[in-house]
Length: 204
Image (cartoon, rainbow, N blue to C red; front, top):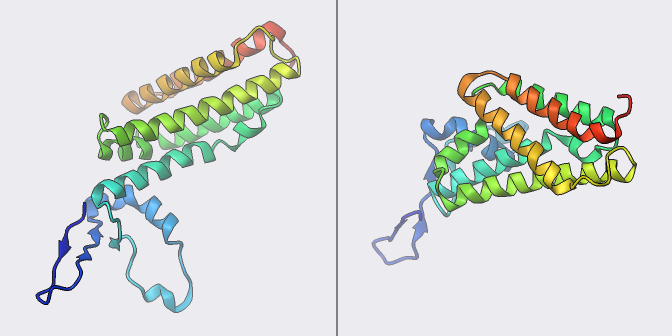
């Protein structure tokens, strides 16, 4: 929690603002910009929000806000997830995922933000769990749409297929983060989609 200072005259405590130091600047910037969009005109003379921002929960709340912001970006950058209704759409989504992580390389903002929370902390587990659940649910919804359109065998379990595909993606991302090699991520996506297509294969 943030600390409070009592005045000499016994006035109510004023919570101190948590200072964003240079060490936190790179990680905190996206979330702070989201809360404080750029303004035009005279307001530009106001203090830089990256220097001081009020977080009642202190540094832990700051890191949690950044982690949630980065987790939201992962799904937002995959807008194709909501329209996986054809094989062309699936391959467009595949290319978007590969392009995103190729550009990112070993510098993962979400990983950095979760590291600030502590990988074993409840907050980190909650943020990561919510992200993976949402990701898997959208993949499963896409598989069901394809199954309803007779593009995928009805015997396939959408939830399990989505879980397996997501596990392959996460494994590929982990290898990319540690080796800067994207081939494993590409293979996981290509083979995962090929597996979905196999029982009722049609031209791309």
